[in-house]
Length: 187
Ligand SMILES: [Zn+2]
Ligand SMILES: [Zn+2]
Image (cartoon, rainbow, N blue to C red; front, side):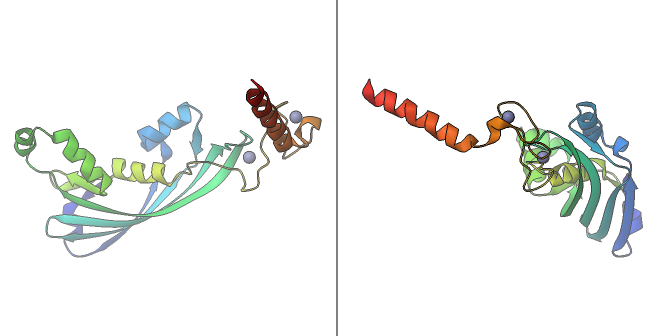
């Protein structure tokens, strides 16, 4: 997943990458842990521009992924998309970093700014694209906005069935709370 600098010398370049999830170590790891399953291909549309030594990429990603709903714990399919910008700049000399004794800190800061170092005459896209994909995943995956989730008592999936204990869970909680307060004020 390399971008050769010589290919972008002559002005902006549009590139469409169709990647297999198996190419990305973090995604493979997520699949192994059964956290998500990514469909092949993952699509990245990139617009690459080089000015001086700085390479800028505006990108759009689309992917389809199977995730577990945070409420009903069922596997569901979700379309993921996201826009991102990345700026690549030549890696400062290794000696400079050793001199500053803060090599790790520098790396971290550049990550947060969407700034990525490159070395030699190519840009490795694997890790930057992998990061963007992971960031585009929902923090709280939901099979649907109004997923009813599982009954905390009997575990019934309330999207598909009803159960007797699920009738007024909130009221039950509040009445339990009220009892605790009442008891403690008595003591
Ligand atoms: Zn759900
Ligand atoms: Zn129940």
